[in-house]
Image (cartoon, rainbow over all chains, first blue to last red; front, top):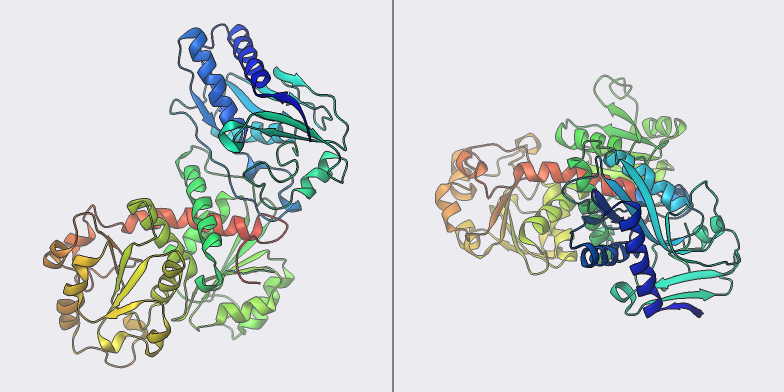
Length: 205
Length: 309
């Protein structure tokens, strides 16, 4: 697999997103960051740290697991759940920024919107992703994008993070075998390996 | 198809997966919308041949919180009362398209028989004096929640072990999870086969109490007793009941568990039952989370992720 983003570039992309969030939300008042496990959660924490450095304001930051809301549960054996950790102030009336590593079909975000619906009523929901690789299957777009990465459906995108994989990188690799995202779902049947080992555990949705 | 019939079917990783899944699902109980869409369109049948309030409602709530359709089928007032056999009832449920069958039956092995007759996943909710796996799972969950670990935990299970499906399921599961179990009972209430169980046996409660992190009291199942196992209830209570004096023998952090229903004044005194170190109501609350985890892992995917094939 070829690295398309290395550590420093990921850092700079996150710093830019942090500034964009501050700009768009006029100082990040009422903002709650929610990362989608597994790799969205550490990214959300990094964004929260950067916003704090810039604006000296703490931003509530948590994690939102979407496993139980997936539309492809019937395609694979039941998966292990990720951590859900909603900040104490809840999400009612907040501007929730969902954070994920790769935006692909948009199905993960669809599931996240459903999950939010059961947790409360945010004033607005925005989406930040490290990589947008295209090939949407639903009318969903990101508000903040680290890098637009034109890909073929055959290619796989893998994000590695210091917190989960020991290093920061976005890797682009050749075909994992199947083409469409719906196929990628089937391919990663079972639980996505923790070390980003399973091909495309992240970009599948 | 895979089923949950016995805790012996669960390997260490599977058991931990259930407990971890239950921990995440426990958060649902604290939200205003206590519902997940995960099992939408699936049908769970509660097939109860024995009276049960706690277990049946716990399974019903768990299935409903996962959006499954639930059918409660109790032996009283049904075709069973008219003489229908377990197999015919199973085939009826099968024809109705049940994805999961939660069964409680007075005969040991009933869940196992049922598993051969239906296409759906069978969850044993208590079969005679054999097993009650989800009770053991919720007990293990409660221990882990309270004590922070299971490996090396010293657990005493006290009372009517002979008639207890809870004891057997707990011994097998806790052994898998690395806890050390000691059964304490009058010699007449210890099963003959206990030598093959992965646990210690003692007849002296006072000696075991100070060495235990968790003390699980079992109800004396008078309804299953057709001969005399001890002279009088009073004598049993004096020797094997957990009263204030015995409670004082326990370590300061040790907890008291009871699968319910409790008989206050028999195996446990009211004072101990109401102590903050008794986890009885916590066990009930955890029961819903654990059963949600079991139903999700069995019915949530294309095929079950846990249990015996």
